[in-house]
Length: 268
Picture 1 (cartoon, helix red, strand yellow):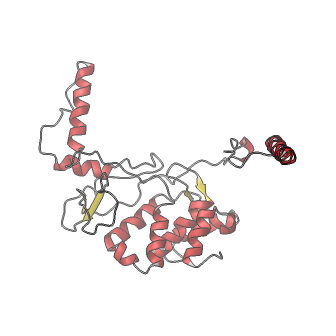
Picture 2 (cartoon, one colour):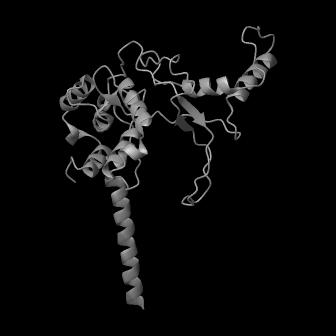
Picture 3 (tube, helix red, strand yellow):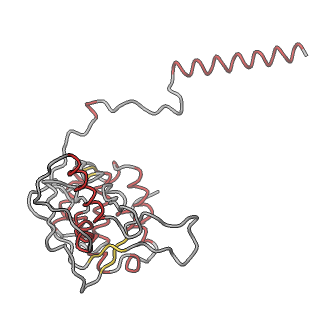
């Protein structure tokens, strides 16, 4: 028993010594990482060609979400922003301009315009001067009342990241359901989005306010091609030039390589 205790004590001591030594010499496996040094930070800034971009065609309307007939989700859907396209429907696309060089965030302008158009109740008087902070609060309350969804929520846009849409397009293409998942009108709207957010250097940022990165430039280029853009399309020519200038997809992030491998154009 004494010998076994001595062995156990010795083993425990060695383990503690190894852990302490490792903590001094090496970072723990769960180390979150240091801040990126200034010399390694991207020096570029987002830069979009000035001027109005392509407009989304009229006919898009926000709809109240409905529960799916198939009981495949563990909970009820709630809070989704649902859109449908009706060729004959009135729309605000023809009056809502988008210039990313002034503001790369469209700010849900189409959605707000549709909700304001559908509102049948009283509207705040925009021309009336505000006499007190309480008047300002009431005016703001009146505005948010007009854009509230029918089921009580306030819907919001999740269009900032540029690595979401390409993955959606690639997955639909790989499964042979691109035209079913993205009907013609959705297809066209996705292409407009991709073209409008391409920056002056030919790339796409990781998000709408990010400078161009190889990560999302490769993904969005591929998505644009899968949506029908030809190789000699000016947007594709510029996109390829940015990708090649920065070393090609071999130097892209692992997410890029994963999607491209799934597509069959990059080796696992």
